[in-house]
Length: 177
Ligand code: SF4
Ligand code: SF4
Image (cartoon, rainbow, N blue to C red; front, side, top):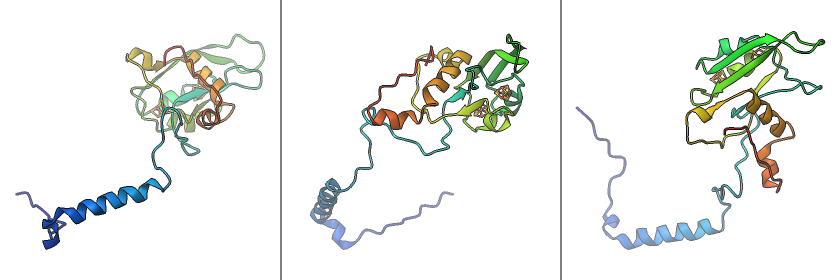
């Protein structure tokens, strides 16, 4: 049988509503002069703390080449099974011998645990601060290698929300999102 716990016992003064109304109006008035807890999004963006786990990116090396060697460690570590990698011999003569020809992440399945980043031996995949992306279709929320590399281009110059709040115009065109 359910137990109802009463945490507040009505007082005699609760029969008169006017004091409560006045107290409520006073609290509203006092809040006007305090720092606002709300942000006028999207004009201002919330800046998440360092280490926030948002949209992934695929990092590039000093020569602008994808760092990923398609070892599939991240795919193996992913508890949501949302990473798909197709490896291939690398087309360049010097450097890593493998690279991915396909690297997809199903963002609707991803739980942003960060295990992929931890598992990567090449620091090739990283979670970024990006939290505000959306789409009308499920297919569009599968981000591919091109999109993940574009996220790197945009986020490697610093936190995008800080830069947007400082007036920099940034658009993230990943092709789909
Ligand atoms: S953050 Fe977690 S769930 Fe998302 S792709 Fe990486 S390992 Fe998979
Ligand atoms: S992102 Fe890292 S762990 Fe995943 S396949 Fe590439 S190199 Fe391996």
